[in-house]
Image (cartoon, one colour):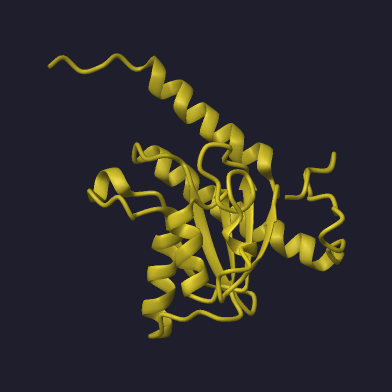
Length: 179
């Protein structure tokens, strides 16, 4: 996982080469779109996670967390973006794509991204309890799997983490409804 540089961009680590400045700008633009979707999830009472799936500079799928409202435990932002893109492309395989997501993917989402053949996953905040891109386990680099993706963490991580913290602070301050 890459650490944040003071500018808010990812700092290079030994495992990855520094990004070209053009790619840094593009990555930030798409992560900002994912953050806007995360904010939409928060307004709907969902954990604020947003994702956009991009191919050749165009968003082909987007989503935000919706498991509560949709009564669907699989309705994570990444899955929503994959579903939208697969329908648009009329193909469950989405090679040559990059997913931007505000929170490190869980094992379910990482597996779906691998099955969809997503080439690159750029994520914001680390998830120390269930992150499957390096925090708990790294499914993207698991040598026993036959598909892999480049995983880059830490882009706008503080923005993503602040949105999550704010959501959970507000949630804890709400009185519980009477039974």
